[in-house]
Length: 70
Image (cartoon, rainbow, N blue to C red; front, side, top):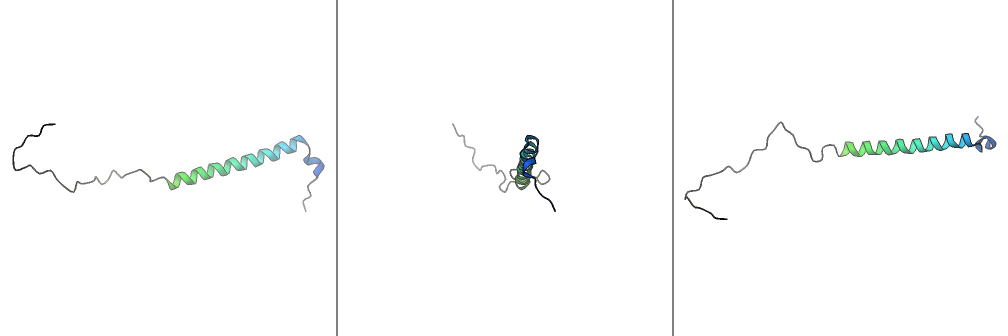
């Protein structure tokens, strides 16, 4: 089927091609991991602009006119 010739694997060109392929595969796996983590955190810290939040307690004017000094 496929036989690896060890004498040819000792050549610097073949070693550089193999190392380049391994490093490229590792870098591609790293980029895919970053993409997946980014997709998981996509909605973290976001909010919708369509529905504004309504305050549950509205402002009520006090019965007495009092002054407060800071």
